[in-house]
Amino acid sequence: MSLPGPDDAFLDNLGRIYGTYAGGFAAFVVVLAILEQLGVPDQVIGYLFVLCTLGVYAAIGIVTRTVRVSEYYVAGRRVPAVYNGMATAADWMSGASFVGMAGTLYALGYDGLAYVVGWTGGYVLVAVLVAPYLRKFGAYTVPDFLAARFGGNLARLIGILVLLACSFTYVVAQIYSTGLIASRFLGISFEVAVYVGLAGILLCSMLGGMRAVTWTQVAQYIVLIVAYMLPVAILSAQQTGFPVAQLAYGTVLQQITVLEQQMLASGLATAETLTPHLEPFTSLDPFNFFALIACLMIGTASLPHILMRYFTTTTVRDARRSVAWSLAFIFLLYVTAPAYAAFAKLEVYQNVIGAGLEALPQWIYTYGKLGLIDICGANAASVDAVQAACAAVPGNEGVLRLPDLAIDRDVIVIATPEIAGLPYVIAGLVAAGGLAASMSTADGLLLAIANALSHDVYYRMVDRRAPASRRLVVARVLLIGMAVLAAYVASTRPSDILSVVAWAFSLAAAGFFPALVLGIWWRRCTAAGAIAGMLAGFGLTLYYLAMTQYGGMAEWFGVKNISAAVFGLPLGFAVTVLVSLVTPAPSREVQALIDDIRKPAGEPVLRDGAS
Image (tube, rainbow, N blue to C red):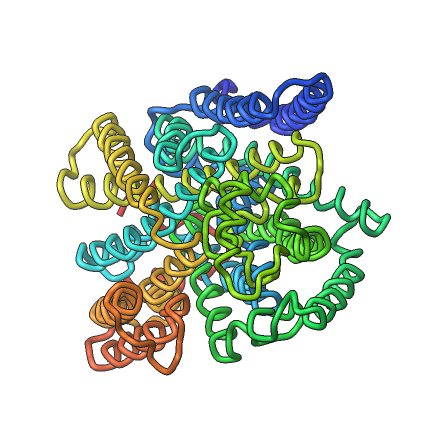
């Protein structure tokens, strides 16, 4: 019999600890609101928001640091289902969800719902097809499962390549988002801001691995969900008199439709430049719309940093419960995003379009100086710059028209409090939420990359006798190296956040999904089939993505590269099945293992990642 340790006391008091944290955060926001009313400059408010929240996350990372292998890789497999659901939601709701989704709905209107449907529906696949069975297996990483199921390091090595490709692409988008927010609220250049954000990310993930990341992500979820829902609730109360925006924004959609017709009638917009907010298939044709939904759903069920979160629960039953909790927590943000986009668009249509060039609101110039808003084809850096640019545009008579205004879709959420004239403390709160979302996902992604390199490559393939201390040092060094490389790529601004994230989903879907699903559900699936399927599916997807984005290749059948897996995924399934059917069946031991992981009851097949 063992005495309760400090970790047991922490786990027993999770409700009290995080309840106190949430209350303290609310008090912090109130204090900053009072300081704003007392005349404290906006920039100081922004600094306090960013630095204090970063400090709290770093403190949690330091307090929960560990030198135990099981704690570092899977948080000791003792995370309760509700808290794992909360951490998974934070891990999932990245800068793409927080910063990019509402902006994409703003820009694409109805067609942007493909992201909401795809990402939400993906959790059904996670719950039904993948997560509980990987937890029953008992691995540390997804490549661990592939190596044991398909008998050897070749499957593991290919799994690592797929993991690196999709996770690195994804983490670049998160660091890009972190840099965007930090540059706005700290008043520093974007190229420097990505490294400032990276420092906070590393403090959370480097010291304590999955254990520190888990408890930091729970804290980050509380911040991000409050930061996302509060501004839109205030806007809803102002516009409709009812603060539940998710139920009230129908009237806003009607107002947007009326304003669109008025802009067309008055010449402020043309049919070629106006995307009707409620009209389907104006930006994506039906095939691309549904292809994107499919790629995002299947990519969700294939992302290693999400799947490894379910390795941390105590039991298989808790893994299933975690999926349900994850979906509930994610639903809160996803059901709010369409309302966020609608209220932001209404503010722009009502108060910006049609305004005189000399009377544009200050937020236009704030974000124009960062290169995020163009007017008449030039950065909206000043009144003089805007007037000079528009004077050269035929037909412009000193009034801002819809085609004259180009807003980077990634700025919509961050700028909405300023667009609506809300107190600056709300803008700071949104920035803190965006940072929390980007950092929580970046933590999980960097951890997935580092674990794959230190556990699957170094420990499993290079030095099986390496002591735990050396393995953890290798993991941390690799984590820093990958993080700095990702920050450098992010500083080059490769594309908008949501597009980069969609590429990662396609790579994961084509590379992992056939091998994972057939590996769990089809006993006849062989190692040769899985390896050939992963290479074919991932290779074709990567080729299409790279060649259409950077090689000048025309799209095949008009399919956009954000849905690149629409080619690689069926090829991966077909090759896996065909090669499996013409190669010898797996051994009886392997087939018995597959039967075992599909049974809800019983102990994990592997113990603490051993194989």
